[in-house]
Length: 227
Image 1 (tube, rainbow, N blue to C red):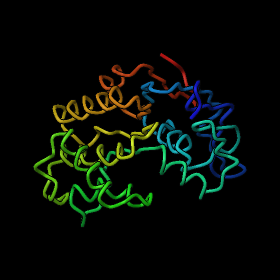
Image 2 (cartoon, rainbow, N blue to C red):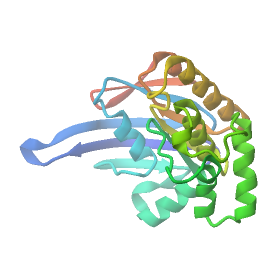
Image 3 (cartoon, rainbow, N blue to C red):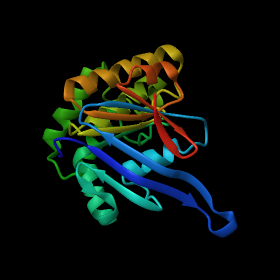
């Protein structure tokens, strides 16, 4: 992991379509993120925030420019290498929770570790500890459908932090929750950031959530502006 910047972006452009139907989404993004920083990506709907997040995480490619994640140039890596990088160092939290409906809370949190090839017994201990830390020690055997929205998002957070990722990408992590539950999830996000020195980059429309981050970056006309 790089000592200075965990994310580096230079001259990033992204467009879709061709010719007269070409649409520019990102037109020249520059970004440096240091380890353990919390970053809020804000902007109008359709401004390209989620697209930028996907590119930073190596889930999508820019049309041109350079993106480095943990010192690795994503444009020079094939999908297998990117997937290995994400599995070892990256966590994700989404607005829609993205839990496996047929797995209970403990199994959902344990799943990434098993996919990384870790021992079942070890990964189960780690998953249980995370769920207990997030107040779900009595919900280990519950399926997602048996949990409230806030509880499901806490399971998603525990899954994202399983393996102690260096960086976590969150796309509207409180978007499907009521205000009180959303504030609780935000508290947990920043607590985990502090406890594990995990870099946090989140997309949000919630100005209060954005205000809690170290930096607020607004995407306007395809460019990032620091507020």
